[in-house]
Length: 303
Image 1: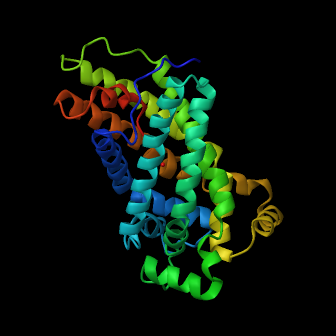
Image 2 (image 1 turned 135 degrees about the vertical axis):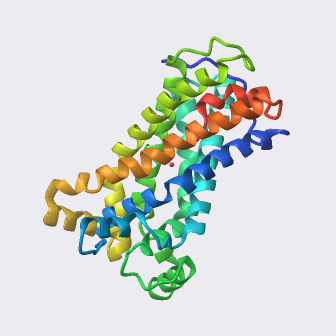
């Protein structure tokens, strides 16, 4: 697979805020719609107990209110996914323009920005997952972070960063690679922009690409999600947590919560790609987005 060079998205150039609006909008809408699924996955992978007398009562605990930390979670998801995919796309285009290999242009920007975003976002991730425990007494994110700081110090806020980075970076690199590869392999729209049928052709291709990228990224990193969430719950170190899981559950911990994770991770990744494509195409058709934005619409963001 050798991608065709595209005009750079110009991450920091004048007018780039038009593209960034589309990326932020797509990421924000996807985070909002998928928050209940993320909550269910966090509870399942962390081993928290969803108590209830019946199946539907337990399902309500998993998917229903109270939605603790919802504002902080949506903020963290939105800026993180938008930053990763926007800057990964811009970095890829810039590196290809400078003559870099397709593999390097796809991997290096994605690795760099996803690592940075995960480290910066880790306290929010740590706190919001902690308060999803149905038995948690913390009223919200701030209370959880204060408790962590008081009992574990500043370093406690970044507890679990190693497995978090280890699962986040491959997830996004794989999702971005699949997204870009599918974009090159799928048929290009035959109708010109603004013509009848153009938008449906763009969105049909985006749907296929989005599903493939989301599922690939989520399935690969489920074991690291389990380890990270267990570390949050028990405050154990990485090696200690992994050994305990192997002793208690054997290899089955590798796919604990896999079904929920495929929904909770694949859905927002795929939906972010799809919604961003749709928003960029819509803005481009109205003369709001730049040609560079519409050129990169089919390689939009995703988490």
